[in-house]
Image (tube, rainbow, N blue to C red):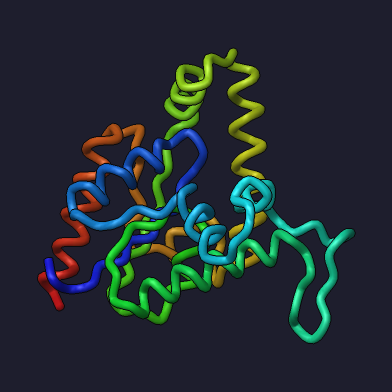
Length: 199
């Protein structure tokens, strides 16, 4: 497809959001930005990607950082804004891509071709996914789910115009526990293609 496509995929931890995004990007033949986004940002700014990863998608610590005239010295803010600017630059260049998390639905809100998706799942499904993926007990998996989703929610609600998981902030909300990863990706691809046809 020649027209620009930008798909932002927010996700609950354990819902398989990254795997869904990989399949969507592959099916549409476009780039995927997730954890690799930090590598690209680090290369462009001649910085260490490992150093940036410590602050990736994490809420700002208000006890450490401070803002002066709207500019923050908190590394969480610096890393978030570097990623927003990178995505905005790629979008301005006409690139089509899928981006996972990073409040892309707000960072790229000025692009009319942006499709905003939220992937969720039932608790049992997410627990089973995390237990299997990381070889954890149910208690350990539950703690990991709670920890990651708490951080994601705080990060999202700090940088985004909408509340994390609130359906009004997305074009499409889909449950991977009902459909599985492959069919969830198919629903998103079909939705995006439908949006393109309606233009």
